[in-house]
Image 1 (cartoon, helix red, strand yellow):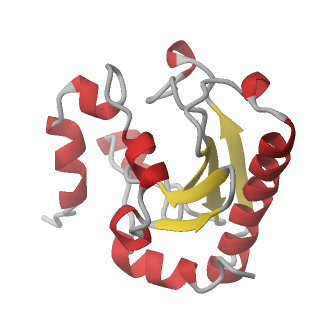
Image 2 (cartoon, rainbow, N blue to C red):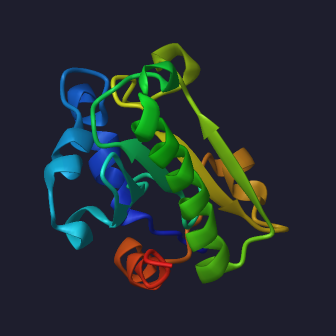
Length: 164
């Protein structure tokens, strides 16, 4: 029997709900304040927003774009903050295209807990690279995704394109 190991998932599975963003904790606030890009897998920081690798990705290369300020909805973004945020969404897509050459992208928001936002108090846009044939029987039969590259290794690959 073949075995797939996804050791990086167990901290999420075992974490209390508040550490998943469903309570009072918001890990994005700490990330926004930090200058340790590698620790948090941050690819880029601007004046108002930042791009980070998703710690619990749907697909290899799954990025999140967030405002530095904790704000829950796109309607609450202001002028220059809004412009930089949406420019950062395009930048995240560009980084993935140059580094990974995907066939397509999913880009979107889950606004509110009932819409699937894991951390509803802090707006974030998902930018997910997709390839022909990147879905298979594993998510359907085993409720498991197979991610072929370690986060640190992928961060090293993506960060090279963050300043372009």
